[in-house]
Image (cartoon, rainbow, N blue to C red; front, side, top):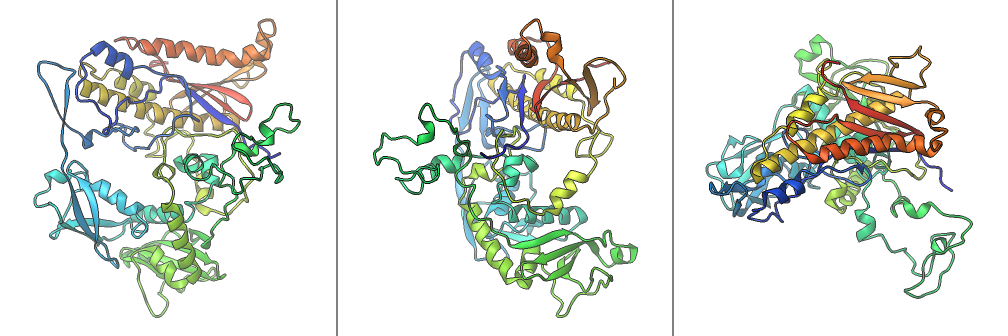
Length: 535
């Protein structure tokens, strides 16, 4: 039997989902009371059940509904009437360096930034990150809708123009290339790393049938050849219950490795004189041919330098060649990388789009097969960076979760457009709160945060981190030995959570609840709440 990994599941008391979709949006809705009850109902759910798309901005939603994709007008006689105006669909041509011009279907309400994301996901252009889109020599603003751009029409030519790098753009580019290299690995999906979650779309659509119709998964045992037969492990009175069928069917896919090592060099950061020459960062690469290279990232791109592990020689190797994309450089120095990277991207593009995007409400599976532990310097860097006490942005600017939760709840909700915006904002804030609370609960159980009552005899330890309050009970079952024992101790936090959920479901003006989440991690149950103002 496969050994399970560390268990982690969460239950959120106030996570709300948006009930609209641009393709299914009805044009008129007249019953205000029904709308309120449909759009404002909160639910207690597990992170294993709600995979959605991630959005970095609090004002934007994590759901599929994007108001930038809908042109609406409201009827002044009815606050609930929403009229959807038709969008204009047309094709534009995109010219990228080194590629033939190709057509791209767009709509008039799309943002230029969405075209950027399409190009960063497309197989032929996915390795480009630092570029601008130009129409007739004019750089397009990323946050402008296409309908507001003068001169854009059917057949317009957008040129992908390579821009100069900054330190930030280099980090984004290198991280993106590393994600592309590991895009077909399942380790991060099972571990919930970097916002990714396990997706079963591939199993449901393509790989749900065993390779041999007459072979059972259990040790190749043959089963009767008829449609009504079921695998032996599903039959009653079985001594050995397999966990393997609960895993995805693509766990045994051979891993494609195109690089041995991709990491930041120990020569970082560049000294003052090298900064004047345009050096931004140094990378170290070991190819599958067992060759090691030190790569310099400058404002114009990437080149191989004469630096070694023992001596710093910033001069480029001869013949000198600067590549704007790190992938182009690696293709030039490693034939194996060129072959394997192309194969990885072809395989990545065959996946369902839902399997290639990050989600705000992550799935943390209870079970995981054993994987070969592979080296990833970026994963190691993320694990060793001390982020306790602040979010991933500027240290010291900690988010006030209680204020954000209450402000989004106080947003206007009289008309349908207002309710849509309110639901999107609420879902985004709750998703961020759940994600941060999960990291905090892991830090509490792992012992990385000191309790605020370590010397007390209380069997419930309390912690404060990132404007959240955590409570972790040790031997709490002793308090319930006369009232149900272990079962009562395990269900008590969930019952408290259900009470908060019931109050929040009322959605009454002026009635507020604390952000509350219950997390099971490594066999321990932790309750996290936003801090009450003034405490």
